[in-house]
Picture 1 (tube, rainbow, N blue to C red):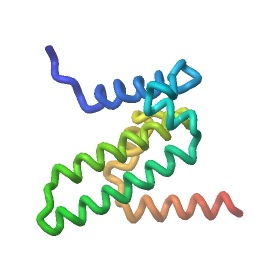
Picture 2 (cartoon, one colour):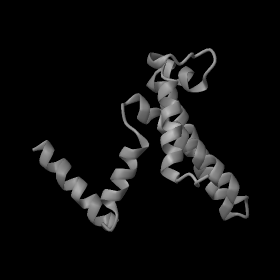
Picture 3 (cartoon, helix red, strand yellow):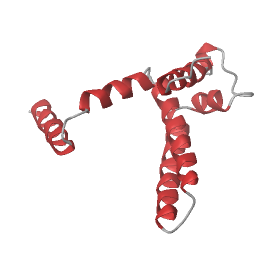
Amino acid sequence: MTPMSNQDILDRLAAVVESRKPANGGDPETSYVARLLHKGPDAFLKKIGEEATETVMAAKDVDHGGDPTKLVYEVADLWFHSMIALAHYGLTPADVVNELARREGLSGLDEKALRKAKAREASE
């Protein structure tokens, strides 16, 4: 059996999330993902906010001797709920990976300046 790549895992999880969309037969009575999607963006966006806060708190705990695996757990929750948002908006983890690949080797400061310049252009 060949080991599964990280992208394979993300793709499999994205497929599960996609299958849980109410439009694809996901049942809000039996599926957490379907329930969040059925409730609409406010529900899953609130969860993303909660998970982001828990991620920050876990990182702060690590700074003070806390268990680093708690940070991994919270980041996994954050990623999972972000994947629900991506699916809702017709996007996939591959879209995010492609964007990260586009940014690879580009200075973060340069990339941010480029985004600001494009935003200024668009508003003119």
